[in-house]
Image 1 (cartoon, rainbow, N blue to C red):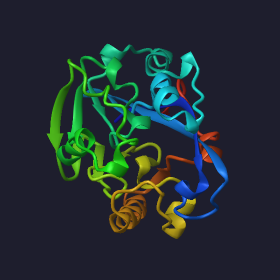
Image 2 (image 1 turned 180 degrees about the horizontal axis):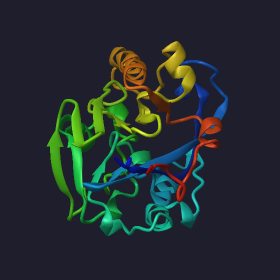
Image 3 (image 1 turned 90 degrees about the horizontal axis):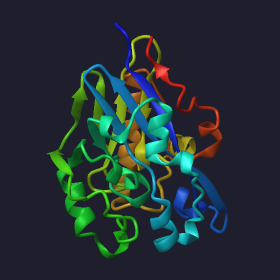
Image 4 (image 1 turned 90 degrees about the vertical axis):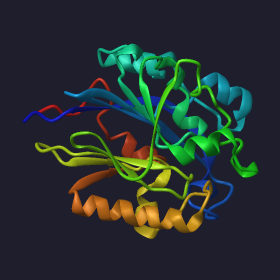
Length: 252
């Protein structure tokens, strides 16, 4: 059996304070982190997990995050590098609906959007402290087709979403099972760094700190039991060692 191809799409970088990477630790130290998406070329569907940030939105609403994004790092350009167009994407699923994970959704006019039913509600009616996180609602465009889900969910054979709430109410992490290489577990924002996973240090941005810690423990458990490599979301050093599109994992 041939494994699906897994492409990591480079969407640019943003900056936040280290006290938001690891809650209340090393305040005043700016950290630049990668923003990336996961494209899965599976026999049953072309799936995109997260779509990065929109440069215009961040410059207008969150300029203090010092966005860096070239035209080549947009979703249409990254898809083109892999031989696809936005209309080729069958399914888009966002780990959650914060602005740095939904910026390219508006280009995916023909895809079905898998969404945790509670995440969509919070994004549209956020708590006061969530408003900047959910500030980019361009994912809710006129052509969007939602498929509300909850609980763990198998998108296609071997491609799983696991509930990892805490950072947001409906956060999903992604597991791609590979037979010929190590499986790949993408944390979304449930785990910002490898230190997060080792020390159970949660991020400054969260809805529920207790559930955030539970999500970290679940990710570590999944990695052990599924024999998967873990891909955190906010750590530049390991990101720079990963194979980025148009290179890919799997496909063997």
